[in-house]
Image (cartoon, rainbow, N blue to C red; front, side, top):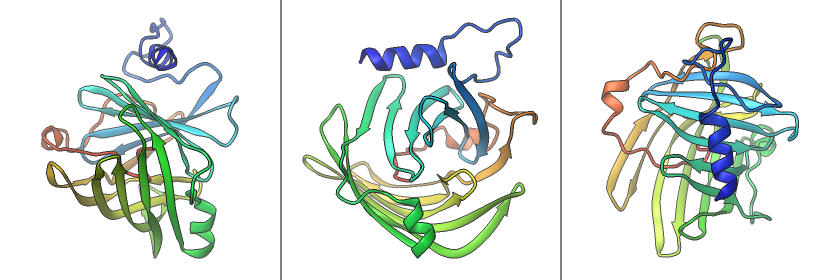
Length: 233
């Protein structure tokens, strides 16, 4: 837990200097901001890379009430580790995975299955499913994206935690999944959400690394959004 405290302190509690804008997020030392994605469902994601971990990238999710989630993936989009914030808990990929997620396989063959386990504070969680390219290509805010369909099941020690399916997007440029619309079921009942991207913002553009989501914020306050493979990475 000490590592989690250090990470959160570095990311969230650093003082704002006279040269910094308090409305912006700043990545840790040795890291470089790459992209900000404003999405539906009152969410904005800031993505960065760090010199110490070539090929890996981090994402911090902000909602209306502040930061909620931090995650790290590798170049194949494997879920390396993630942190839910306030209260803080950590998930970590157990290696080796039975069937690792592979963006390369998805792009080369059109489909990729996965079967991996996450270590969590409540015990291991097995994630099983697939991603498939639909063949559809879209451009959102000048960003070329491939459309996927996916289905995933999260299993805990006492059985299935939730199942979900829907569509996501793949950015080949950033080697990353980006959430779309999905639905599923859990012990709490059925759920659905649409976290589709609206704006892609790069360094030097207005709104880059903002902490403030812009879209659907009032409507999203009562929604239940579970962790999902492909985006909570």
